[in-house]
Length: 304
Image (cartoon, rainbow, N blue to C red; front, side, top):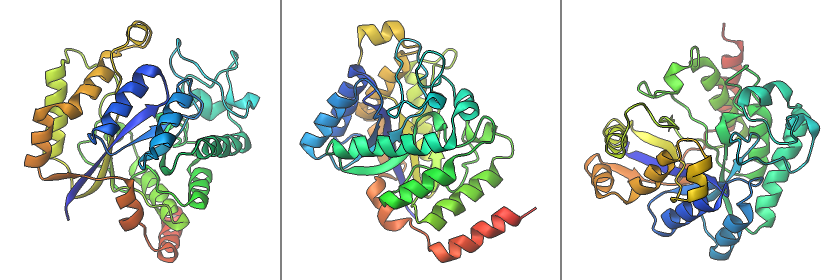
């Protein structure tokens, strides 16, 4: 099997600085795709651009949390269980998992999908801001409801089938193998294609980190990339005085904008034998037989 990599830009529509960076990366073909936030203040700018260009690789970034003190937003449906005392989406995944009513979440997911669709965007796939639907904090997963919705939309989704042994985030979560196997079998049963692996890297600055050390760490991952289709995500942002002043560790986002244009990164992709791909490939090639998947799901659910 070939080693294929999806590079997805999260948080499209978050802010003007994010929009400028992501638009430039998409225009130059340096990334595979981006996912747009229907609730964020920069949504209209991002959506107008994507619709005007009929951009084929913009997905839906389901957003149920609002983590930055200086950049808050509310849900589209306005249900009180989706908001904190300030009337904004919760800052943390834990608060969301503890406070959000399931029915309200499903209606909000629908509303975000409809807003992006009505904006004229050809939605390529679906993912989730901060993993708020995965149940990582309290074990309250809303993936069954989410996969059911995505199956009705006929789209692929960011989840993952296997855990890469060197992934810093996923490997740090105790007992994650069983929930991942169940969720992957559930996606297959609903007919939702997913990539093989999800590769993470630290969101913020690591102590002593520089652009060069960050670049070396990402290039090293290319050489260790498993066979199959992997997705990794970046949060690129153009330098912007307001964001640099108000968003913690904004420098990392500037680095992530710079990296895909770096000649060393381009050489690393080629030398490591990694092919950039997109969610169209996932949709075409990674769908599993639903009937057989249902039996596998039953085995996972009943296994002791």
